[in-house]
Image (tube, rainbow, N blue to C red):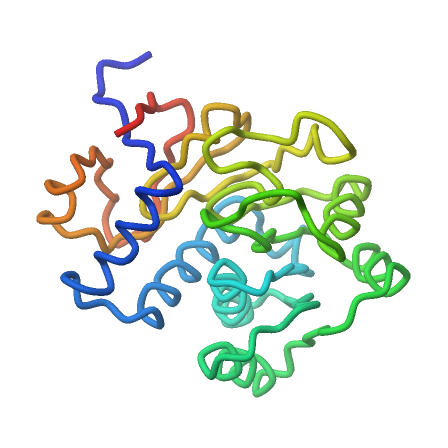
Length: 246
């Protein structure tokens, strides 16, 4: 271990409170936070997986804000020259998500909104990388279908996976599933947002932090210890850094 101070871990309940604080006293809109989060995700993909070997990216989106982060990431990845495809089996109805999908449609990015096992396996076979933006810090098990089948297929595919905020199916405060087909799910790369969550104590892989929007006042209120971001990057590599619960 280095002599650096430990990076703060946010429990699910504290993460929810801090998120609310960002959108109240912090004066951020959900659109802004989603845009910055998705931008961070796209930078991690660009940093870790060059287009020359991973141009076809399958972005798997859930129905909540974590899925919205994935929709934003897909748009940025297209701008970088990747060929993203979005798998969105339970699209959200609020206008924000419809606008994000319209932005993707205007770029001719395919969006698949119905799930069948055959169609998903076909997309996996055509992909070189998966972005897992199915569940975020509000996830509480069990994993409901079709997401259990989707995650099992992702694990079986052996493709590299970048998970957004937490590996989908992991309990935010307790870590991976203790039994069943997803108990060994451990993505190759994880990008925590705002601050890592306690489940990161169980994570083994490349770990980044994204979400360069936390003010000094909020850091002080929540006693957060966060690393500095280098230059103009929206991400910072925190692999092997010490972590500690707030």
